[in-house]
Length: 542
Ligand code: 6LW
Image (cartoon, rainbow, N blue to C red):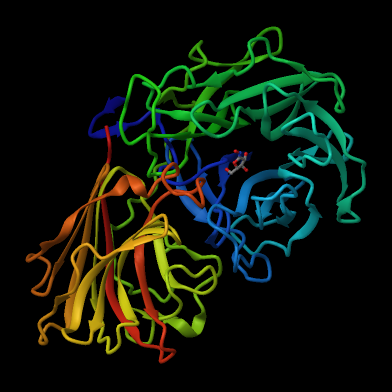
């Protein structure tokens, strides 16, 4: 870092650049602007797009799949939904390809792939064009002659019994809005499994850039090349050009699933997914990743013989990476507290599978409050009244204050830490036949439910109840107050936050943990809760 008078200019990229659940990054540059798209699975709106002008500072800009006509995830399971977007830009048009996984547990995976376009990345995107259901991780390549090709990863065992997965390429007709080419296999191997493919053309070579060896701790990034688009592709000597698989001590584990970008000044960078384990270890082991898979960036360079390598001269991803020669472009700091004064929900919130039903929430019925009308239970894969944001650091505190007058045990509202429909810790206000209005914790660990403190009655005069959660690595502690923000007292035991992780959750393993607000009313009488604010304060890890 350089010190210039009072102003500190940060000229280092600090990884991960997109913290918390932000996997499968795909990057483009459009003149001086950089955009990264990441996967969102069962969370709505679909696909996160972050923006930067210096590769150091990033801001969440938009989520393109924001209408039910484009994306309706009702019924999809945990970690299904939107996988691995591919963002490209050509002749003034932004193209986004993605998979919507409906089932992934049978031999015939149901993985329809779609394409949407726009000329304004922050504006409305088109309705989806259906491509095929032939595998996943589709990527669009715009060849110099104007033809377009889609390369995807195919795992259908009916097609080839010999391979766990292979990569196929097919021509796409923009005019006809459909695939027109027969699939041609451009990579197949029984040893190294490739996915998340992208094709680039440079100095007479087609490069096939793909993730290798799954998305866990053995993950890596491979590169192959050919003079012909349809191959044969020759592999980079030594295989993975980046991996942390032999180095469980590195901060950035699971590194792979990369995409490349060239700056205005001819420097090259690779974005890739990574994971930070709850505990740093020197040997491999059963480690948990509560923050899910995140996005990092490395500096790369082309060798004289036309291969790509990390600029640090190794295959290991760095935490601190030399920033490009671009003017610093920081974004304004976001407030920690959302007072719900706007008539729109803050961009950091997402809902499950579909948008909140307009008739089941309001930011205007009571000024300065989020009113959530109770809806389906937390196990529902259909219409929940729930908004949440990602955990982005190992240590954070989230606080809310609500007003809620439940009159039935099936009325609940409160503060939730959750991974999916089977894994959460829920501090909530509810009604008990003996105690009246009361507070309790519901915990779900792989569908096994517990109420670690039972029901604690709340004083009748207390209209406002403050709820708080403090997470510190694998420790999760709830607290509440009926006397204002300075009178919190812990409630319940310290809970095990590591159960909310990719590794611990049985149904899904691709997302990451969230914290948020929700309300249930199974009686159908639309009991509502008024939330005055939501505050999320994290402690950056070193
Ligand atoms: C992604 C694919 C993968 O689409 O995980 O393990 C999927 N492989 O590349 C979700 O991130």
